[in-house]
Image (cartoon, rainbow, N blue to C red; front, side, top):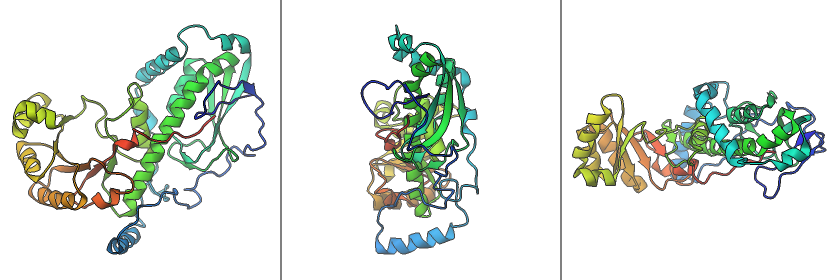
Length: 364
């Protein structure tokens, strides 16, 4: 039998039902990977101005043999097994907290279905990048169930699926009540992690379509208690995580500068505490602030809320004076406008939307 409950639907979860589905793939390894077919990810870059179109086409041809795993040539650079990055004890504790939050007292539904051994199937029902496997595993391990994955279920793979053309990714075995206890939490983690990975892949593909080889990054705008899942999704999608948390890298914004009295004062005080092992980034509103930050010893300068042409101009000037300083473009940059901000002098483009406002994928 199969446990089925849409990850994006509302209302009560449906009971265990028959595993056989008329619209199910006849083969668990049905070809759902658009990359394997040589297709694109389905993401179109924003329309470029006439001169930019020519430059873009030249860059595409130039980089045709140097594609990263973000594009179609996935075998050129295999995706690392990012699951080995995760701290297992912390993940187990985090997942246990999720389960406790969902079931703080009695599970009457679990009493009704009983403890007989059952098998459920995991189906993907919308197109996107598959991500979140370790968290799905951890949830069912927490409730005493076993997950067996199909060959199709490779993280970082673009899988084409829909409600009428579902992709079978895994089977879960265990006591019936335990499967249902873990079901909703596991699906939520999977759908959200895949959503972040899909948004990230689209953003990176857009940047690569312009011939730009810098880093597309997320931000610290993550969901409290769910940060590690969203940061993991960024990696699987091909984006950079940016700083993982408040402690990892020093970022000095206007409030810090106002409190310290100057950018120089803020950077020097931060360096005394951070030492040599932490980078310091300063958010800057104009070239004068950027030069002051770089002169004071900032490792990264963020050009924040700039107009595209002014950003390129100031980034060029700053990079020529301080070639060792990383330059980040941020503030109001979207998938539609990203191409206007890309420059050989910009090292990082960050977007909060990658972990804030992403679309969840549909699983059951």
